[in-house]
Amino acid sequence: FRNNITVEGLWVGGHPTPIVMGAATNRGAIRADVTIITAGAWAGEIDERFALPVYPVRGQAIHIPLSTEPPIRHLISGNGIYMIPDGLGVTIGATHEDVGFTRGVTVGGVGKLLQYALALVPEVGSGDYNHLRPWSGFRPATPDKTPILGADPRARGLWWATGHFRSGILLAP
Image (cartoon, rainbow, N blue to C red; front, side):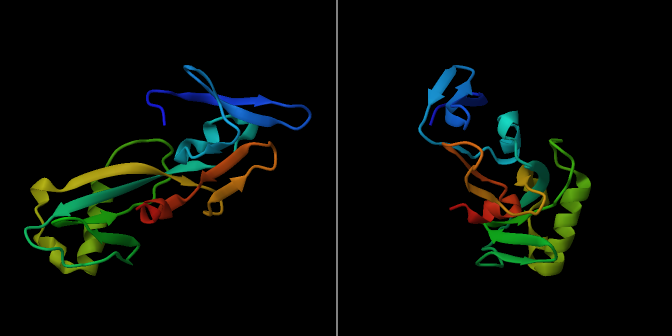
């Protein structure tokens, strides 16, 4: 793992079959026998020669602090949202918005999450609104909403692990 490095493209050789030999970065080439693209919503923009149909879908989520143990003990879903107990609170997500790479949290997004959460688990209404923590991020989506996993048939040494859409946060440890 290397910090403060920007990947500007893939380092490609071979003819007639391309061989990906690593990444071209702002600090020079990084050699690798296998290069795995795990750039999330930005995966489709790493190198135009091997672009895949991965695009961003903004998701907004909120954390509601509670003064007692959360009213749920495990992940639950319904009404198009999920709720996860998180310390002395509940994390609620998430919206699905096709807005490109537009960042931000909106009143409408937070309002929708609160409305659906209250309908699902009314006890979250006792949460501390003054310390509610909203955020947003970008999900890597594909046209059919299924992940792209495995070797790229167009080039030796190139693998993909992207397009997990809304399952990414739920697959994390």
